Amino acid sequence: MGIAFKDLLIAKEINIDYLQNKIVAVDTNNLLYQFLTTIRSRDGTVLTDSQGHTTSHLVGMFSRTTSLMQKGIKFIFVFDGEYPALKKKEQERRYEIKKEAQQAYEVAKEREDIDAMKKYASRTAYLTAEMKQEAKELISALGFPVVDAPSEGEAQVAELVKEGKAYAAVSQDYDTLLYSTPFLIRNLSIAGKRKKANTLAYTTVEPEMLSLSDNLNALGIDKEQLIALAMLIGTDYNYGGIHGIGPKKALKLVKEHGHKFDEMFNSVKWSESFSVSWKEVYDTFLHLPVQKNLKIEYSELNQERLYMLLCDKHDFSRERVDSAFGKLADVAKDKKQKGLGEFFH
Image (tube, rainbow, N blue to C red; front, side, top):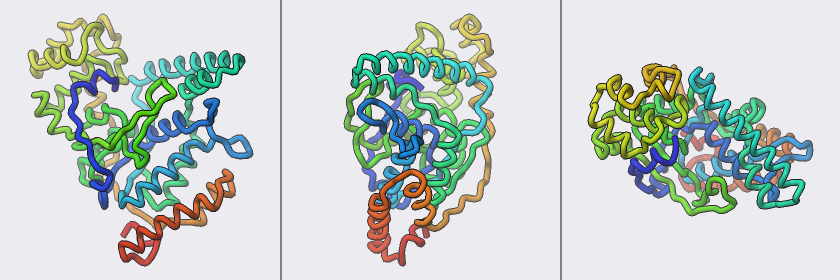
């Protein structure tokens, strides 16, 4: 969801310690794209090992996760499955943006313009099947469960929270709220900073939590109306929304029409903007497939598997990995546990 939707929502800053001993469900594809976009060399290229294989996703996942583990936070990592047919156009649009960014990067490279190279390179990030598999191996070696969603990861994450298997969803995308997650956490990081979109600068951020019920009460609408509001502004399934309708006008329209969505979308001439019916977009949000009543199991942290993946395969220094182990062991000791193997019990 775009910034416009954000401007209607209220979020509460939280201290990272607030999440101690809580389980959160992570929109993992979203997280990996963050790492691939921001963890890069000075010239904008992704980090690689001696064989030229990308490691930015592993660097980010290992560092972020082990740091948050030290705070006593537990995770369920959810990966996207097959995207809905309606998302095809949005995927094509993103692909074209990446192509244009790649062309701009090549021009900047010829000019040896390092700042421009870094700016455009960050827009060319691709998450491959191999990267996702390596991330799953890393997660499993750290002892956390991996869930493969049938469709959108946000919908599966929301389901886990609704079932009480996780306290909150973790994603940067506000559209997670459209799948009715009770709580959404953004900016979950120890670092306290985030790269500004389309710039080389960083901004200070703190973890923030959005309550679905608090936001619906503040807006004076319900969950179904929130979806309709988002559709007026624009979603992944109807990019751009209705021309000339911003968030405030969209909220006004939703309140005026109540649940007479057909009347409302006809009034804004939906069919002139989109070839797909509003009902198809709306129903996609309501009926995305998810796995229900999953058995979520944790396992012991496996140091040898981590050494094999990170050190042997991708040239991480053993000192770096051992340092993370040592900090986790100290946390376990403080909790009077017997060792890392009981971190999750």
